[in-house]
Length: 306
Image (cartoon, rainbow, N blue to C red; front, side):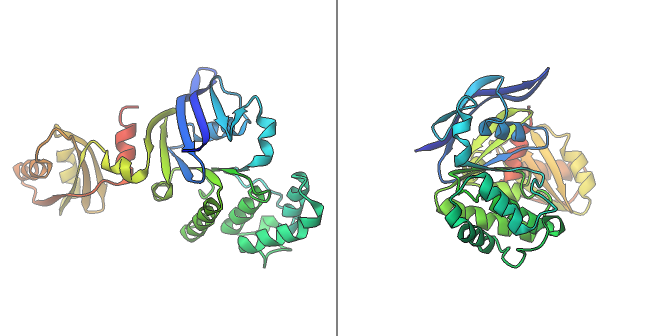
């Protein structure tokens, strides 16, 4: 397996705060690799170190066979970076923003119009050429930012929570663009706190309080959950939850409308029967059945003890 990124003990401290804590990663080329975690988990700090924008306090990183931050200047032309906040110029048009960045990248002048027009068409912005960026919708601004970050055809793209402020339809379109780029050989590292987006990644790292608490393919991580998942349906869901959350062997109990999603220790031989018996003892009628794990279950288990 050819790696795009490899880290060893990567750490970043801000005073007494350890934002990233001895993280070891191996990220293959030509895939979508996700960082999943809540705000403050270290996702953005990781990306900034891998881009060479932030000096690690400890450890090392190799990005596209280049050591960062020591040789990060040589890496700049090979990577793209889309920040969480829209970072283009509101008072320039769509064309002017791309034209400005084309010149900043010092790309061939003879190919400028063709390349910009190609990006406008690819990201569905060819009907917005003369519109000021500040007047675009959230989804349009997102597509413009992605067009700008990929204008120079980078080998590796860093996307820091790129869909946090857009509607579900725009998010779905955005991911289609990402998979098209991977098909062309681009490696994409994307941070997110959306479970449905994490499901789309080829591989995934879960970060919590700066630590790498789980990593792997989403489907395999669900298979390796280390808990039984029981779904419970009944009339008094609040009473059922209050009863089950105190039960030995129940690791987590989340309410989903009138249903409960219960994680039970693997040491329990028949978790469904245990749940039914406990509820019956309390006079609560319910149907309990075993279901497949979700990525949210993986996240809950991975972050439970951090």
